[in-house]
Length: 193
Image 1 (cartoon, rainbow, N blue to C red):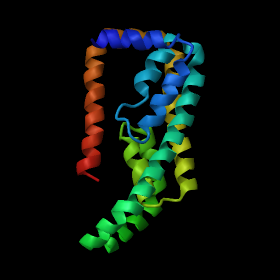
Image 2: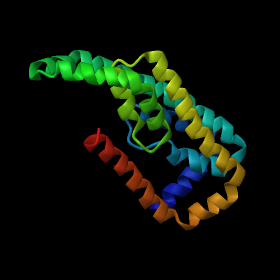
Image 3: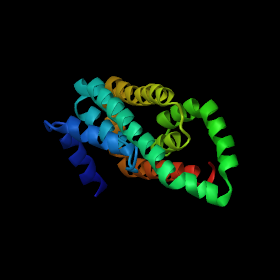
Image 4: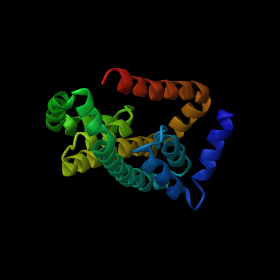
C-alpha cells in the first residue's frame, strides 16, 4: 500500500495540476490538517527536479496563508469561547502572564515550529489566541516556512537521484520514522506545552 501511494504521488508530479494539489495540502496543513506538505513536496521534487524552486515557493506562500487562517481561528475562537472559559475558571490572570511571555518569545516559537516537525498548526492557532502581533507572526512564518521548504527542495534538487534511490529502498522504514515524528510532535504539543 505504501508503495502504491508513493508511486501515485510520483505520478502526481507530472500532472498539470500538481502545484494546486501541493498548495492545497500546504494551506490546510497550517491550520487543521495533520499531514505536512513534505509528503507531497519530496516526491514531487524527486519526480521533476526542474520545478524544485517553484514547488518550494508554492509551499511557502500557501503555508503562510494557511497559517494566517490558523491565526484567525485562534483569535475568533478565543473571543467566543476561550475568554469566557478562562474567566469562569479564574485563569484570566494566568493567561495574561502567558500572553505576555508569548508576545515576548512568540516569534521564536513560530519560527521553531515552522522549521521543525513540530505541528505548525498548533503555533498558528496559539498565536491567534495569544494575540501575537500579526506582522511578527507573518514575518516569522515566511522566514521559517521558506527556510524549511527551500532547504528541502534545494537538497533534493542537488542530490535528487541518490536521495530518490535511498527513499525507494527504505520506503517502509522512512514511513515509520515519519509517522513517529508526526505523532511525537503532537505528543510534545499536548503534554509538554
